[in-house]
Length: 277
Ligand code: GLU
Image (cartoon, rainbow, N blue to C red; front, side, top):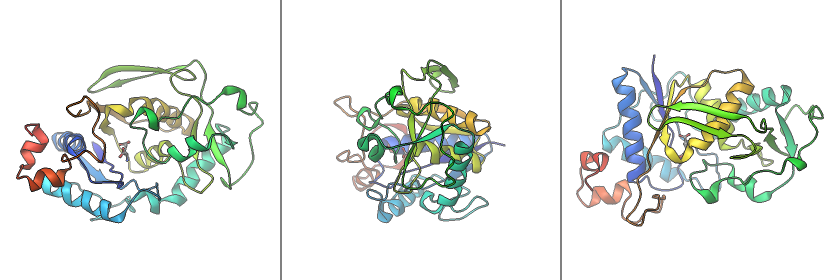
C-alpha cells in the first residue's frame, strides 16, 4: 500500500518550487491509490513560525492538494508536527547509541546550527568532518540520553552508497568523500533533520519519499541511518528544482513567487503547478 508524504518546514511562505514538488507527491500517491501524509517539520525553533505552518496548509489546500493524515485532520500516526515528537526521536537516538553508530562531539558550532533543517543549498551543507577528530571505534559513550552533547553518525569511509531514484535514475555517493560524519543530535535537545526525517518516515510507514533533487545527497546519509537502525528504506523520487531567471534555486524569500503572491496576481492552481507562470 503506497504511503507518500509532504513535509514542509514553516520558515517562510511556500513558493512555486514547493507547489510543484508537493503537487507531484500528491499525484504519485493518488495514482497509486495510496495515502498522502502531511507532516510539519518545525524543529528549527528559532526560524519556524506557527503563522507559516498555517499558511502552508492553507496554500496547499488552495492548490487542491488533499492529504489523508496530517496536523489539521489527525490520523493513526499523530502528532504530525515534529516539535511534538521528541520522545520518539530520543528513542531512535538511543537505538543508534546502543548499536555504537554515533558518538558525542563538541566540534564545529556552525555545523550544529545548520543541522536542524534540510540542507537544500551548498551553504547549508555540513563540511566533511575530519576523521582525525573522531573517537576510536568501540570507545563509544554509554549515555542513556543525549544530554548536553552534539552527536555524530560515524560513516563507513570509502563505502559507495547507491540507490535508484524514480526520476533521477541511479545514484551513488561515497561516504567520507561526498559527505562525512554528520550530526544526528544537537546539545540543545533537538535531533538533526537527517535523524528526524528517517525516524518519522519509518514510523509513518512511508513507502516513497518525493522531494527536491537538492536532497539527493541527504538520501545517502539517510540510507546509512536506515541500515544502522535495521529498517527498510522507502523508494525515492527526487524532483528537479525550479530555478529563477538567473538560474538560482528559489528560496523561501523568492520575490513574487510565493504561492500567495501568484494567487494574488490571479494565477490559478493549474498554472502554478503546471508551470505556465
Ligand atoms: N522539511 C524538509 C524541507 O522542507 C523536508 C525535506 C524532505 O522531504 O525530506 O525541506
